[in-house]
Length: 206
Image 1: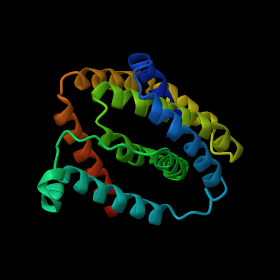
Image 2 (image 1 turned 90 degrees about the vertical axis):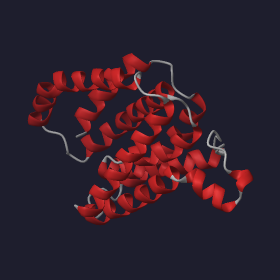
Image 3 (image 1 turned 60 degrees about the horizontal axis):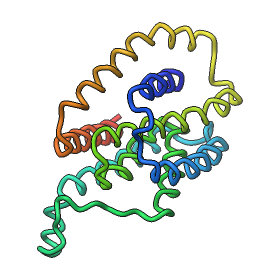
């Protein structure tokens, strides 16, 4: 999957260049690099089955809490429930999220749910959110390339298959850019949470 994912990142960057959230980038990327290095030592020994269950459980829990966050805050106290409230993360939150994202990405290409859990509560807006995830995925996948190469996970057939799929990747990116501009931030957030929850359920069942 890595060559396809990386080609998607490159194509997407052209649509979202310099629209990302710089603070989140500088907090997440150092942690992600650390996570990738740590995961490279256990890549061939970790159980893919148990890893999927852990990731699936975490993202399902987050999706449910985030989806009903306002109601939960209302239950805790009427004065705390502000649907427009933005979560202000500290530096160490971003570093830890980056480390976890780096580990999960190296082991199972599953950095997305962790990054979403960090970015979505900050209410960055549709384009900033996607631009930030795009540049983060680009750096994470770029860092993984020498790790995977060293472990002998690439072959010639894989690159030929990637080249053949590039036109479809480009079409998918273009469709995503078009849809991104058609939804409000609230609907966009709901869609992301639903996709995240469905992904978590899938990981728990497979």
